[in-house]
Amino acid sequence: MFSRTHVRKLVILVAKPDLRVVRPDEVADSPKPPMSLVEAVESGVYLEILRAQRREIAESLPNERGPAKAALHRQLSVIAKEIELIESRPDDERGSDAEVVDGVFDASAV
Image (cartoon, rainbow, N blue to C red):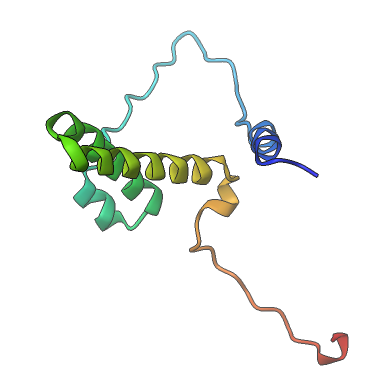
């Protein structure tokens, strides 16, 4: 049916944000600085934790040698793939903390 590449492209096409024209007097908000790993863990947002881990690994890579460096490269690759997977999902599917209301169970429907 669809390969992962096709599905990812489809999701990206469907999930495009609404764009608008910027007024000449508008000034862009300055971007928030990235969270530290401690801040990300305290926030409890899994995607932010992964991003902070990715930053820390990338910053520590130049100082590593041998097997430790290889392990960090592998971990960086795993984290990057997981971030890409999460970011490719529509916003309503990203979090697992959505409130779900149970419906009435109808035993005759089974």
